[in-house]
Amino acid sequence: MTGLFSLADILLSALSIPVSYTFFINEYPLFDRLLPYVGSEIAFGLILGFFVIISRFSLAIAVFLSLIAWLIPNPPANTPSPSTGLNIAIIQTVLPQHVTSYPGISDGLHYWKTHMIRALQEANQQTVDVAILPESSMPGFHSTATPVVQEILNARHSYPLIAHHYVDTETNGISSQVRFWDQYNHVQAIHEKRKPLPIAEKLIIPGEQASFSLKDFTLASFICSESLDVYNARFRLSTSDIGIVLTNEAEIADTYLPELHLISDKIRAREMGTPILRAGNIRLSTYIDAKGREIVTAKDSSWQNLYVTVTSNSDTLYSSTFVAQHILILMTLPILLIRKEKIHITSPPVGIYILIMICMIYAQIAYGYEHVSSEPLKAETPFYIDGFFPARQLGISDATNMEQFSTYVDSSHIPVKDIPPSRGVGIINTIHGEMYITERRGDRITTLSERGFLTLKSADLEQISLSKVLWYTYKSEN
Image 1 (cartoon, rainbow, N blue to C red):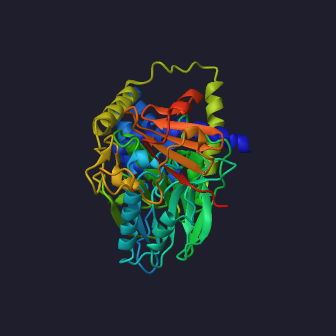
Image 2 (image 1 turned 135 degrees about the horizontal axis):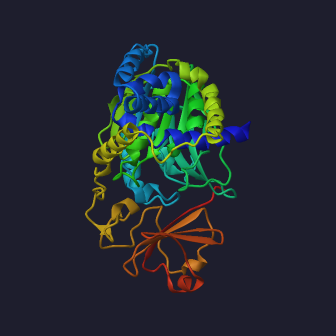
C-alpha cells in the first residue's frame, strides 16, 4: 500500500502542480468552485473536457454545463472570533540569503538577534496564543542553551513559539526541524523535514513527522516544499485544524516560483477546507482561509507581524473522499494507457491548445518578469567586508581596528588545517579579494563561495592562515 501511494505522489504531483496553478492564477471560477468536491486533478480534467465540448460539439451544451456547475453550493467557511478561534502572530522576517541558506554559518547574529527580539516583543503587546516564524529563522546549529537562541526565546512573555532552524545532530548530520516551544521555553514537539524539494534537495533519512496541539486545535507544519507533496499535504490537512507553512523565499525571491508555491497552498486550503498560515522569509507571509482566499498578506521585503484569529477547518466533500479519488485516478490512468484505440496526444482539440496557451502567457506576464529587490540590507555601520557582510553583524566594533571582536568571533595566526574539530568553524577569507566561508566537521572541510560548494585541497590549507581572516567557532555541548 505504501508503494501505491508513493506512486500516487509522483503521478498526482505531475498532474496537479504544473497546469492547475495557472487556472488558480486566473481565478477561473469553475475550477475554484469544483475544488472542494473533486480536487485539482479531476477539476482540471473536467475543465479540459468543457473545452473539448466547445471545440468538438456544441457551445450550447458547454453553456448548459456551466450553468449546472454554478448551481453547486459553495461550502461556508467558519467565521473566526477571539473566543472560539486561535489568535496567531505570523512574523515575516527579512534575513539575507547568505545568512540563512548555509546552516551553521550565522554571520548576522547582531542583526538577526535584534530584529527577531523586536518582532517578538511587538507580539507581546497583542493577544497571542502562538507565534510562528519562517524557515531558517532560528540561527543554525545553536542549541536552545546557546545565548543567542535563548535571548530570542526570552523575548516572549506568555505565548508559545513555532519556528524552524537547523540542528547539528553530531553523528547524523543536519536535521531541518520545526520546534514547538511552550511559554517556558520547553520543547513540546518537533517536526523534522520529510519531503525534500524534487531534484534540488535530497534527504538520506526522512525525519520524524509531528503535529502540534494547542487549545484543542491540531496544527500541521510544513517546511517549505513539503506542502508541494500533494498526497502528504492533503492527508495531514485532513487530520488537522490548521496548516502552517514555513518558507524561505530569499533564494528565489526574484522569480515567480514563490507565487506558484503560494497558489499550491491556496489550492490545498480550498480543497480540504483547512486554513493555512504562511510565515515566509522576505515575502508572501499570509493567512489563507478555508476557502483559499488571502485574508491578509505582509508587504514584500519588510519585517512585519500579522495578527489573525483562525477557526478550525470546514469539512469539504473532497477532504472525506480524497483517498478514494486518488485511487480512482490511479486506476483510470492504466486503463487509458492500455486502450486499443489510439490516443492522438499530438492533436488535441484546438480549444485545449488555446486554453493552455492563454494560461501560460498570463502566468509569464504576471509573474515571470517580476523582480523583488535583493539589495544588501542596511547595517548599523557603513563598513562592509568586501561589500558583502556588514562588519558590525560580525561583532566588529571599529572599521579600522580588526582586533576587536565579540565573543562569537576570534582571531589567530594558526593554519586552517590545525583548527581543532568542533561543531563548526566559519571562516571569512578576504586574502585574495574573494570571500568564502569554510566549515570544518571532524576531518571534513567544506567551502561555500559565490560559486557554490567547493572542496579545499591540502595544498590550499597550507597556504591559508588566519592572520588576515575572521573566524568563529561554536563549542560542542559536552
